[in-house]
Amino acid sequence: NAGVTQTPKFQVLKTGQSMTLQCAQDMNHEYMSWYRQDPGMGLRLIHYSVGAGITDQGEVPNGYNVSRSTTEDFPLRLLSAAPSQTSVYFCASSYRRGGTSYEQYFGPGTRLTVT
Amino acid sequence: GENVEQHPSTLSVQEGDSAVIKCTYSDSASNYFPWYKQELGKRPQLIIDIRSNVGEKKDQRIAVTLNKTAKHFSLHITETQPEDSAVYFCAARLTGGTSYGKLTFGQGTILTVHP
Image 1 (tube, each protein chain N blue to C red):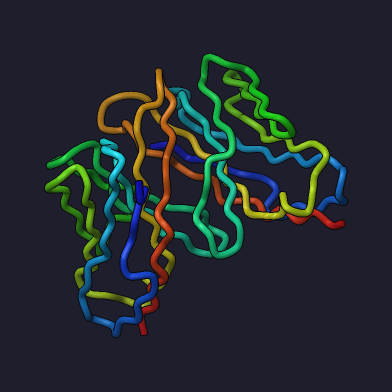
Image 2 (cartoon, each protein chain N blue to C red):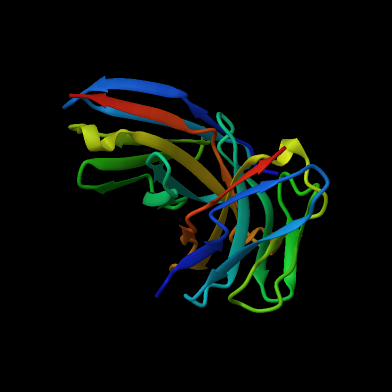
């Protein structure tokens, strides 16, 4: 299994440009999430999905869109990039590991810079 | 929603000493509490987790304790080694409904173990 994969690894955008960060998992996990990581602020949830066709907002959803048409893929779209969106983005997938335990697997991350 | 506070933000210990990181959460409905380790430039990885019906869990040099009444949980690392140096994140997960799979993270603790 490849686990959780993300592309691209690095990206530089100009203010106002749009782009899609790709995320895929081959573990048949039902739950998928997008986080952004900024220094001193931990991991903040952007959007998440509990299954194909079902998505919901996290803590910091503004400026981002998601869709989940298949179990495997969960792309994150930046509508009009702003310097405040400069961050490291992690995609994660998880499954219910018995009872209420949810082991979450992270992708390798995408480092995005908006100038 | 859930709010997770983590302390300290930085922790420096000598090799062989113990390290303790503490987290508090706000929503008494949270029932799953994982801890993640993130080495520099890498993705977060699960190191230990605990469910709300358990007070303590150990895995070799790592242990987690949970006090549901006080709404706090702690990570204990004994006999620390230089390779334990990393950023550690706690997280909490709410029960039920659309919160399935949704984790709220603390701000992170930078642990440095000096040889």
